Every structure is written in C-alpha cells, then in structure tokens.
Amino acid sequence: MSKTSKKSSGLSSDKNWWRQAAIYQIYPRSFADSNGDGIGDLKGITSRIPYLKSLNLDAVWLSPFYPSALADGGYDVDNYRDVDPKLGTLADFDEMLAGLHKVGIRVFVDIVPNHSSNLHEWFKEAIAAEPGSPARNRYIFRNGRGTNGELPPTDWVSHFAPSAWTHESVMGGKHNQWYMHWFAPEQPDFNWDNPEIEKDFLKTLKFWADRGVDGFRIDVAHALKKDLSEPLRNLNVFEGLDERGNKGKGIFADRDDVFKIYREWRKLFNKYNPPRVAVAEAFVHPERLPLYASTKTLGQCFDFRFIETPFEAGAYRIATQEAIELAAKNKSSCTWTLSNHDQIRHATKMGLNPAVNRRDWMLSNGTSHPLDVEAGIANALAATLYILALPGSTYMYQGEELGLHEVTDIPEKAIQDPQYLRNNKVDKGRDGCRVPLPWTTSGKSFGFGSGGAHLPQPQWFGKYSVEAEEKEPHSPLAIYRKALELRKSLQTKEEIKWHKTKDVSVLHYARPNGWHCITNFRSQSYPMPKGEILISSQPLVDGRIPAGTTVWFKK
Ligand code: GLC
Ligand code: CA
Image 1 (cartoon, helix red, strand yellow):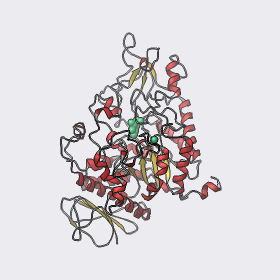
Image 2: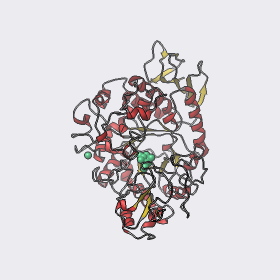
Image 3: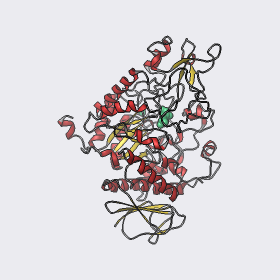
Image 4: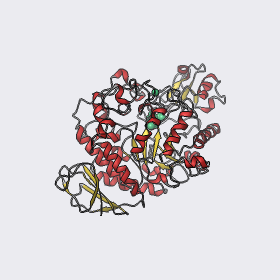
C-alpha cells in the first residue's frame, strides 16, 4: 500500500477486523440510481456513502455488478473482471471503493465461480466448438441418452429448470450435445476439473484484491466440484440436489475435493496485508460448515440457521449455542444473518403466523392470511438486537434497517426472478425483497433515482423511507444506527455467558465487558433487571420489558 493511499484510508490495521464486523449487503441494482434509468448503479452507491457511514458499518458486501444479461439478477456473469455498463465503469468502482475506505468501510465483492453466463466469451466459444475440444472442456458437455441422444445425459435436476441439462441447440450449438447447469440454462456450470478454470479464478480474485477489495462472498461455494467420472452417475431422486447426507462423497455438491481450490485461494489471500477475507455461501450439513470456514480455506462460512429459526426462546438459544460451537471448531467466527437477497424479508416472516405456508401466501400476493405489520417489525428489531450483541459478525441486508417488509404483490408481468419464471410459477420468487429502496417519503421512485424503479415500489414504501425514519426518534433506522454504534465497544473477547431468568421464554446473556442482552419472547411483559439501559428495541413500559423486545444494558 502506498503512503498516500494509507493516509486517505480510514481503515483500521487490525487483521482480525472481520471476526466481529457489521456487514451490510448492497444489492446494487436496487440501492440508488444516479442517472434516472431505473437501475441502481455504482455512482448511486458513492452518492450514499454518508448514509452508509451513518449506519456505523465495518463493511459492505456488493452483490454482482459485473456485465450480465440478468437471467438471474446478475448471478449470471458475462465477464468477471469488469463492471456492467448499466451500472458504471471500473473507474466508478475505484471511486466508490476509495470513498468507502476513506470513511472506514471495507468492501466485499461477490464471486460466482460455479457457473458463468451463457454470454461469457468462453461459453460462446464452447458452443461454437467441436465436441471434445478444449473450449468445450471448460464447461460440462456430454452426449445425451436415447437412440439419437435426445434424452439428457443423467437425471440431475436444477434449481430453476426441471433438468440440469439443456440441449446445446437452445443456445445455437450444432453438435447434438447437452451442457450442464445447476441453475438457469443461462448459467452453464464450469468444469472445475479443468486447471484453466482454477487459474482464471485466481486471476479474478487477484484482479479485485489488487484494486483494494477487502473480502469476497463466494456464491454456492459447495457446488464447484462434481463427480464427472464416466459414466456419470444418476442421482435417482427427482426432488432436488440435496447432498447434505453424503459427507463429502456426493455426486454433485459439498465434495471433499472442493477444499483443494479454497486452499489455493487462501494462499493468495494471505499474500495481502491485511489478508483478504472470504465468506462461503454453502448449503451443507451443519457439521461440514467448519470445513469451508477453516483458516486454511475461506475463513468464514454463512450459517443461515437464524433465517428459519422461529422467534421463540428455546429455538434461539439452541441455534445460538450450536452456531458458536461450530464456528469455534476451525477458529472462525459466527455469521449471524436474518435476511439476504434470496429470502422473504424477516420483518414479514416474523409478522406471519408460523403455521402459514409462506410459499402459498406469497402466491396469493399476501392475501390468504393476515400479516401483523407492526408485530413483524417489533420482533425483527428484537431479533436484530439479540444477534448484534452476540460474538461474531452480522450480515445485514439493505432495507432491513428501515424495517422494510416484503413486497408481496408484484404484478406477474413485472416479475424478473427465474425462480418464478422457470419453475412453473409454483414459487413467487425473490423480487419482493429486491425492490429499490425508498429514500424519500414521496416522489417518483421515492428518491431511489430521478426516474422510475426497475421493480414496482408499493405506496406504503414512503412511510419506511430514510427521510421519514430520520424524523422519528424510535424508528427502525434510529435503532440500527444507535445499536451499531454501541456495538463497536462490544468487540472484545468472543465469549458469552448465559444467565438464568425466571421464565424459559426470556433469554439473557452477558459479554465479558459487563454488557448484557435480554430478550423477552413471551406474549406478556417481563421485569427489567437492574442495570444501566443502553438501548431497547421498544420503549419499556413501567419499568418492564414489553413482549417481543430486546434490551441491552450494563452492570
Ligand atoms: C446463490 C445466490 C442466488 C443465485 C444463486 C445462483 O444462491 O445467492 O441469488 O440465484 O446462487 O448463482
Ligand atoms: Ca442507473
């Protein structure tokens, strides 16, 4: 690092900054639009640096901003070492990065190594090339079954289409082969047995790390290696590719040989000062999470259990304890998460009766069962304070700091998500949490930009806008800002001590510096213990903690 860049940076020199960091996920296309074309962009992010600073974050993680035809919201990458012209330029990226660093915010970018898009140069070359050629060997091409190869090579299924194989003719190929894709047909899987792929991803990681990127979020990190030995094996299941029980020896995912890749990546990350960090998105058996989070591999792995843990004391306590024990196994730290760009917003989940089938509810545009909007936000804030005081890092998703609910009534013609479009419309998809953020109470696109928004924003968004919440001393935004500021002094030893309460539906834990966190999961209030109150997710009533409330206090 040059002297000048060091001066203009507000970053700490702590190598372990990531262990207990507050990280905020930005979905760039829906954050802020600088030129009024309805699509959020990098200059939009730069223009909102003061806002990000006001949240008291340690880092932001940007979902993909690379050139992409958006078959899967940018997780279909045309070129890993460039910026989508719709979102800006590499110069805009550098400007944004420098601006964020200056105010002490580090940056994670999203790496999508399992698949490229069908518009990646290499896939276009592969489709034009002969079977057995080096160009085809970068992906997974096979002959079909049946007399004329008219059937897919195996029974493998994909997330966004019934089969994980598409006939090459769909993409203009002329050789009667099929290619494999775990997601949409526009997302062909790379052949990670080909050393050229390994080399190219090291080049991509180096490209961003050299630019000053601090960390990487690794998309479907468990899927890169497959058993591609001939003959390919059938899975003999047609309900998904869940290989969680296979202890590293599955056909399709979470195979032991994937760690060889990450050990190489780690060597590269450790050449930087401070070492670059990474967090894996891996849907694997919980016992296998530490393998991705080891100091010799990626260092951290998302533990998504709180996304589905019901807001209930017993479940929270078990989830907390298990996650802490797992993270400790390989000297990693916890990754508390309630929401991301793939999930129904947690304020909505927490305002719905847990017995409601959420998929059907979403398909009914949120009309089949009542949603308790206020309780959802109250529970969400209680859950946030609960996880923010725990040892480890917290990954938040844009808009949750406003208490935003899911948008459930996006009209069919506006839906963008392949999860809906490609799955026989049996699942409404993920657009409802990707609607552009409301910055102002009114105006075209609620201050997102000077034009419209690429997904329709509902009327009620104005009430949850940054402008509206900045006027409100007890708004979700005010609580997030204050909690994240207070949390900075919590970055001590990663320890937690459980305290007994008079009711099993109340959880109370303490951190080594005299910091206490108490959450009332009951439906009635609970007496507040003695101590100096630092923050509460809802105001106390007559010295008692209301139902669905978390309080931080000091003793
Ligand atoms: C990850 C992403 C998701 C994407 C998928 C395919 O799960 O979070 O948004 O659709 O990978 O890249
Ligand atoms: Ca724009």
